[in-house]
Image 1 (cartoon, rainbow, N blue to C red):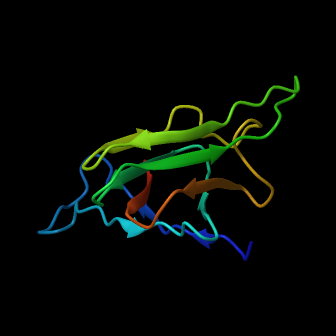
Image 2 (image 1 turned 180 degrees about the horizontal axis):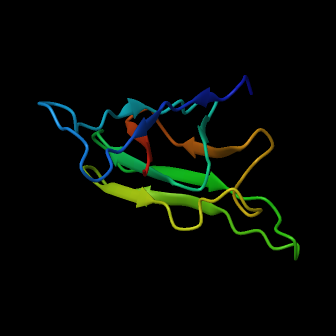
Length: 121
């Protein structure tokens, strides 16, 4: 497998931030189903995924062993056509999700699974 493709993290506006037209839009990108994706995580991120295709698809989030040797991937989570999912609880900088390099590893079954990484203020 070649190098994973990084998902650009988008910042969510905080309280009292000025908002202009289009300033709250979220941009989804086609996932890299051949090489996988990464999302840089600091502990304040949400991963959004959307199936924009004409058939069901899947998303997998790779976990790593925590300090007690536990590992629990989110394996081939199915998204029907038009489904959106938000994955965020536990995407912290502690062991369990963070890979070497401070990233979350994401795999999808096809490019019709669109992804967006959001960083909360």
